[in-house]
Image 1 (cartoon, rainbow, N blue to C red):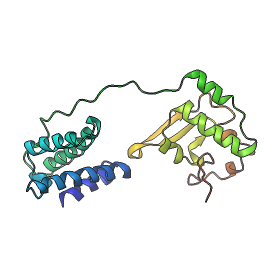
Image 2 (image 1 turned 180 degrees about the horizontal axis):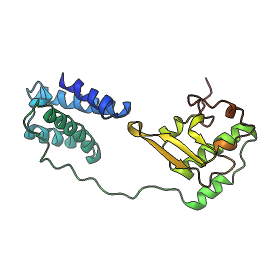
Image 3 (image 1 turned 90 degrees about the vertical axis):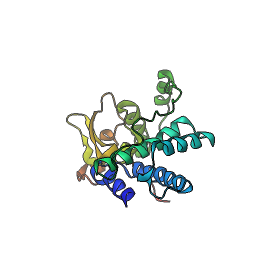
Image 4 (image 1 turned 45 degrees about the vertical axis):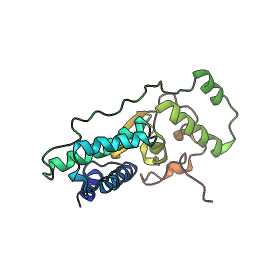
Amino acid sequence: MLLERFLDHLTYEKRSSAHTVAAYRRDLERFATYLKQQGVQRIEEADDQLVRLWMMTLMEVGESPRTVNRRLSAVRGFFRFARVTGTVSSDPTALLEAPKTPKRLPEFVEEQRMERLFDLEWPEGFTGASHQAVLELFYGTGMRLAELVGLKVGDLDDHTRTIRVVGKRNKERILPLGGCTPGHPAALPNRPYRAVRGAQHRCPTTCRKKR
């Protein structure tokens, strides 16, 4: 089935995250359901008119332009793959215009508010230092939540004051710790975990207690 081949392509060749692959699957299966309602049994049999009508239907039921664009992106990716593999001779999405999305400024936290947050009284010992480390790593390096959760002890480099993170599509980045101070992982009290240098051991900033 071409859909499964495309999803395997995303997983093993494009190295897309499991979240991305799952989102593509949902969007394409939803598109396939619409096509069957129109008497078309396979996604690769759709033409540009059907894709356009599908987009209009999504807008009519109240989906935002941003959501429609995301769904269209999945369909575009599928047809690009179908054309490269020779399954279709043309791409019905090639000339389609995506709905315009309203531009908005990104939200941010004012510097003064961050300063007040850092000035708070942190709990004593490991817990307080660990919580402060999470905050400083987010603010000081700009790493994503998924990157923070995936940190391991072996990702820290005391000598260069850098930290290795693995992001989208398993891409690695080296981030400077910069002004991260006592709260950063390398300075946690007593640092008993530092005796274990194996890369598979979780950084204590990301450990979660069992419930």
